[in-house]
Image (cartoon, rainbow, N blue to C red):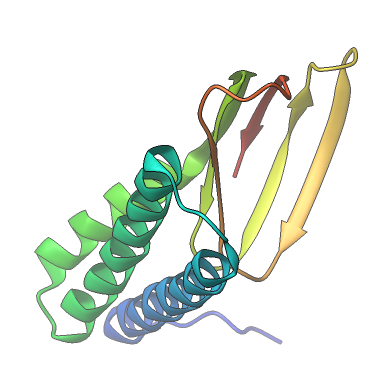
Length: 141
């Protein structure tokens, strides 16, 4: 039994819907976290702004694909996917972003060499700037 979609336009439509849903879920999680945060300082505002911008970019990529501007939409989607490829943590700085489903594999160097595998169906954004909790990791999505 084959489930392969042979129509390119249908595949691009599905990619557009995926980009929009991933961005909407991410915006919802970001809004929930921002509303639950008591005091927002400059660094927190920067992190929430970057997260919101990335999820809005994901939504923009999907809407451009749905409007059938294929060339520009696929370029936007590729840029969005490239940003999601690497998750890195060095000392007190880390960056981890996924819009939609994820399947990450990588190495955590914090306490030796630990191989990790992470699967999820929701959007995720994790960014730390100069925190005391030092982590060293590299994951590929």
